[in-house]
Length: 370
Ligand code: NAD
Ligand code: IPM
Ligand code: MN
Image 1 (spheres, rainbow, N blue to C red):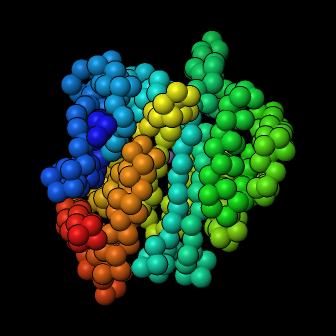
Image 2: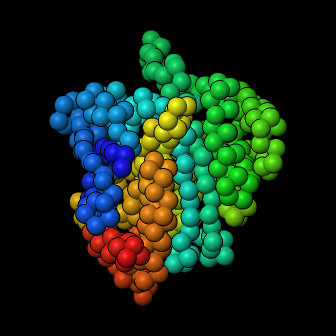
């Protein structure tokens, strides 16, 4: 069997708490199902800063580049609010994304049947929801230059971020969205702001050209990103795949998270381009949520986003499709049985800790695999 090398980067706040539940799964999969995962752990974010003054060390970066997949918890927190910008915890995640060339961020928002009542929106609006946000992850205003604060010398300063997209970046991310749409309902909605942004004009044009050249079997629509945010809360089931830039994708995926009941439910996969020879691709899997400083250390965080990110890892990095399906079913079944962490708690349900939720998913996974 090919080796399955995983680098675990738990990070800060609830990151390590959620990661501990995935570690339980890895242990069971190795011991009982011969999965053969080899895990290594590294430091990222505030944890790395505290240890060696940077948000990720070169050594851990090397490990990330040579692993088959990286599992990432979360970074950040008030403890590091005043550290220099270059070494703030979030810089570790951005470096991983950039150096691993993880340009495609898949953020599926699925409303599990048992949680249709937990959303802040009406049940009929979210019931059966299954959408996929494809967020461009290595370009746009996150990385464009110049990016600086300059002193204007008159008592004023100027903060500058630059939104930049080149044709190839838009082509490759829209290609990912069209390919994935073909495995779903064959619908892509592209979101930008061509009414105010030059990069938006190019975005819309290149998505349309890519569609015409290679994917005309897929239905393509365009929407201004602000209206897209509104439509996501008005009637999200109109969407199948949404493709959008780095910043809009960040915001729209947090909005989509709440359709599913909680930010604690949304997983993600960040993928690089497949190697033309081996077909394998660099990948990092992380929940959409952050380090949740307000609940960190209390053992009450929802580990489902992290566990579901591991399911995406099984599917996309190791082609362990049956196992991924079983893990996703285990999550759904456990929710059906009434297990709830505080963020998705509702009347009559059974409120459990992070660890008890993880245990319940592991036990269910085991039972489904028997
Ligand atoms: P957050 O996602 O950490 O928290 C937002 C809210 O959602 C909080 O009330 C939190 O308690 C709740 N929440 C999030 N995940 C949860 C879970 N699994 N279970 C239960 N409740 C959950 O966002 P924030 O508060 O804006 O940011 C906190 C820190 O995290 C910041 O430093 C930010 O930069 C960082 N952050 C990191 C990542 C990442 O590492 N990928 C993502 C987003 C934010
Ligand atoms: C996310 C986060 C990150 C982002 C931060 C922590 C750098 O919000 O993954 O959604 O803005 O991309
Ligand atoms: Mn975000």
